[in-house]
Amino acid sequence: MKKELNIHFEVYKNKSALTKIEKKLLKAASESRKKAYAPYSEFLVGCAILLENGEIIRGNNQENAAYPSGLCAERTALFWLSANYPNVKIKKIFIIGGPLHHTADQKAVPIPPCGSCRQSIMEYESKQLSPIEIYFASTQGKTCKCGSIRDLLPFSFDKNHL
Ligand code: THU
Image (tube, rainbow, N blue to C red; front, side, top):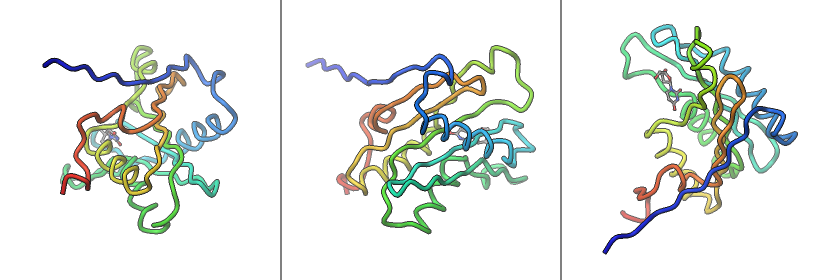
């Protein structure tokens, strides 16, 4: 039996198509991106997480001379958030990434979260029992939006399988 899975996402050509709060998150993520510690890859990622209480938490990638010891922007923010606000729900996560020195083409590509970050977002989404909206953007402002991590991580493994 063959089956099909559909995922849903929206694309915004540039930041003028974003709402006020989305623009605020883009700005926070961009500012945080500029503070990333990424001397090895020179690939800078920033993220901004909107909580249900209206607070915005920021994070960026943190690299290490022992490469695998580094951490992505999304998990830097998510783990800090969960450690400090364990019971506050996440509404939106906005990610922006790109090389420090980019060509015009690279500037236009929205940077999606890596597999490990998707798995971590899944953990918090299944814990809070409500969807987390995920935005990922290029440094030019072109943005993709998914309504839930389920669109980025179909066939996911979570606590319900244990
Ligand atoms: N990176 C992130 O921060 N988030 C992702 O989802 C993808 C990759 C970082 C990790 C590393 O510091 C650099 O980008 C290059 O892979």
